[in-house]
Image 1: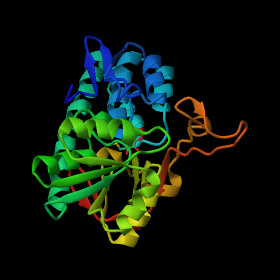
Image 2: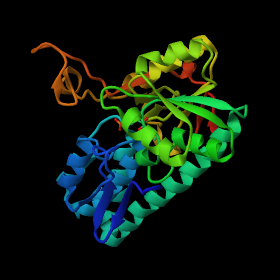
Image 3: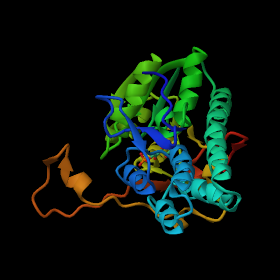
Length: 315
Ligand code: MRU
């Protein structure tokens, strides 16, 4: 099935693609309670900043005025500002009744679809060249939004314009969003692509195999520092050294003016289990400690440009 709508409101419930089951099967979940949705967010059945914004808003519809449930939903994952933003925007009209909350949530869904299209066009216009080799990390495609995605949305527009030579998709340890989700999308798009181990990113740039790095964002601080999937910072360092543009693609809603700089962004730590085991198999000695930050912060001076649905920012 392609394209899929990642998340939507269907017959009184939240319907979303269970991303933990991809690439083997594309299964829809129907969620009728806020707690079911919180569970889906925590185990990354739904993930990616823009999709979390829509999930947050639709979750307020499910909460039906239960303030405690809304607060738990808002805190289900800390780094992507879109989740709290979506919750707050829907909750702000709660006193106008459930229909108004649903309308606000569906507006966020529709705005995301339009924003991703705009980012795709603007990002493709920004990049020079017509046989582009693009490196990317994590999944920033339709699965991370509603339909088209952010950085992967630019890749889709380049492909539609016949300007894409190849995508180098980093596998994205430990949960493999690149290997499982981005390659699945690129294959359905018919876009040439190649899967790359995370640690190979800077070297492949150094040997001249990459024209641009495109990444998404979970939160952009007021000074342009950008939190995104762990590994993005290493790519930015490698890109600077190799003279490759490092471009962040994100909707305006991912910019958080209340966060002055990257130091103030809360980075989710997902615990040792995802590191000391791989696919359910233990890969480190029993009792090994592990750190598992799910995101890192790229300082603004390493970012060539931030492409949003409204403008290009050069931090
Ligand atoms: O942990 P995830 O899979 O939710 O992390 C997602 C990312 O880091 C994406 O790059 C980001 O949310 C932008 S998605 C368009």
